[in-house]
Image 1 (cartoon, helix red, strand yellow):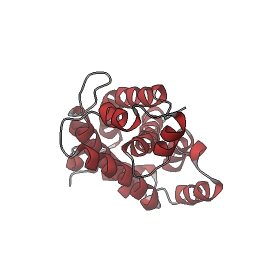
Image 2: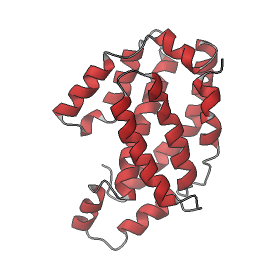
Image 3: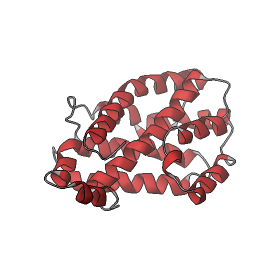
Image 4: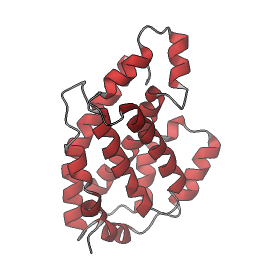
Amino acid sequence: MSGWLETSNVKAKWTAVGGSEGNTNAAAFAEASITIISIFDLISGMGSAKSDMEGNAKTLQKAAAGGDASLQSLVEAELNGKDDKAIKKIVNDGKTTTCALLWLVRALTFIKVMLEVMVANPGKSMKECVGDGYAASLKPYHNMLVKGVFSAALNMAPKREDFVKKLGAGEQEVMGEFSEMLKILTPLLDSSRAFLVSKGVEK
């Protein structure tokens, strides 16, 4: 039986995002994001977090509407000509592309760090890997209530070996696939975050 890595086609979807520096195809990015976020279907307790992440990706997908627009052009269309007060309002409006991309990049950073920790630390449990990913991404932006929800979810994380079985043929193969995918995902996230910082959206 095929694992998630094969059935989701996740690496190919991230490879297809392409684009030069500062010109990331928004539709492809949104589709690849929705696919990688589905990894949380395999981690008990992460349903609520997955739903929020997916919602931001779908907001971006709707804005892109299957066209050739870049992430950067969609955000610039919302922010250009706006003063700091107006930009802050846009950033905090859950219906805007800018807000959706901000939180999506944070969510994808969660997944990226979780995978990095898994690859680099074969002895770490999934609870530890998920916890490290959360601490390095979303945790600083969450209030005590949401942090409590995530804390409870961590205690429901599966055993590492059980999780790996759902992903592919075995630990070595799965970690190899993750390593390859991270080479594609990391620069895309780095450039997206740098762009958001340049626009005053992310700190």
